[in-house]
Amino acid sequence: MSKAKRADKNQKEIVEQLRTLGYNVEYTYMIGHGFPDVVISFDSLFTLPIEFKSKGGKLTEDEVKFHNRYKGYIITAYNLEDVLKGVKDFQERLKLYHENGNSERINKKTEDQPNIETLSK
Image 1 (tube, rainbow, N blue to C red):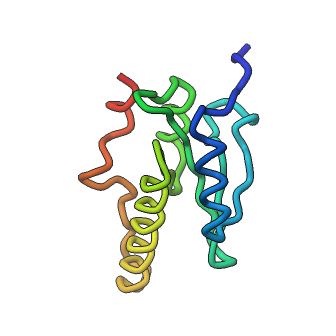
Image 2 (cartoon, rainbow, N blue to C red; image 1 turned 180 degrees about the horizontal axis):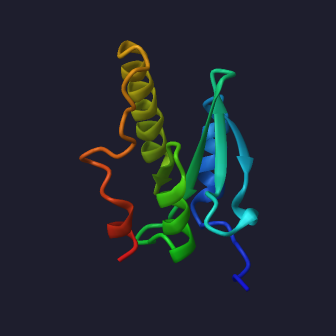
């Protein structure tokens, strides 16, 4: 039995900031099993999951497993700037994907996004 999910301390403040910026934010932290804390949608088209972490926080074992099996893009954020950087990175990857005629898959990991396993240690 997994422990009850609770919101990270910084989550409410970041969600309020995102909503002020025009993002739709839906809480999903209560799903558990490593599923990210919220999903945001923007441009009436895109939805991205976000895992919030408080300063010094690390991914749980379930979160590491989810991140490793999920085929989409996930943002891990300690603050609003991390979310906005993640959205920008996603948009740049999407642009590259379309510029390549959808013929090449864009690796979701970047040099500045370490392998998720290293974040859990």
